[in-house]
Image (cartoon, rainbow, N blue to C red; front, side, top):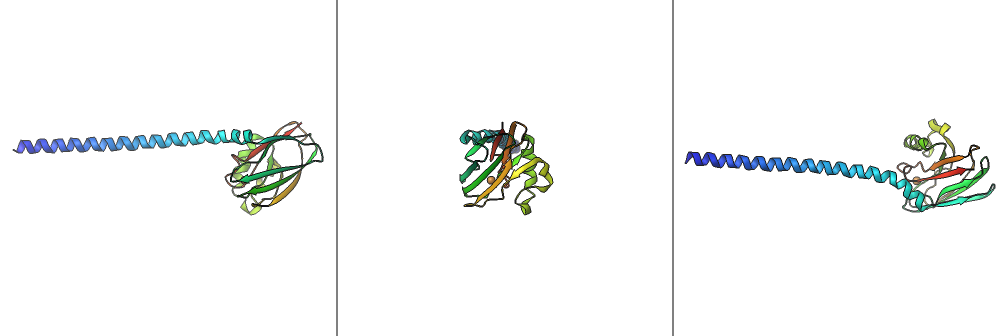
Amino acid sequence: MKKLNFQIIVAALLLMSVVATGYVLSSDSLGHSKHSVESTAEMDHSEMVHVTTRNGKTVTVEPGEVLEIRSEGADLSYDITEIRAQAGSELTIKYINTSTMPHNILFVYTEEDIRTVGVAALQAYQNEYVPENEMDRIFGYTSLAVPGETVEVTITVPEEPGSYPYICTYPGHFTQMQGRLISR
Ligand SMILES: [Cu+2]
């Protein structure tokens, strides 16, 4: 009788350890699947830059022309994502924000400047998200346009032919909300 009790207890303990192991395994696999979701999200993140570019338009502007750029709805995008302009010319941009969020347009010199300026802008809320400590990376920007607002800026297209990014520096937007100014 005592031996049977002992066997029952051993069996119960074994069962418990199997359940416990299963629990550990399942939480482990949960942890793994969560991690792989994060990795996928990171990959999608860089893909989004391409999505924005693909959905946008390319325009060629002549010196003295005023270019209108728009944002609509809840998308973090500009309707024009490639501007071709003459090197050294003056370019006036009218930014019409008919979207549901505040946005701006800010021009930087290099691809690397996008992240540096975008991150620094997070701390620059008192200056409409234009980081004063990174001005050497910036060659033009509009003021912050709230939904329904139109803002304007005149920039000088860089003398050196090449591709110059423009971004929105409102927090959380710069990784997706981009375009390129092509100086030619
Ligand atoms: Cu924005």
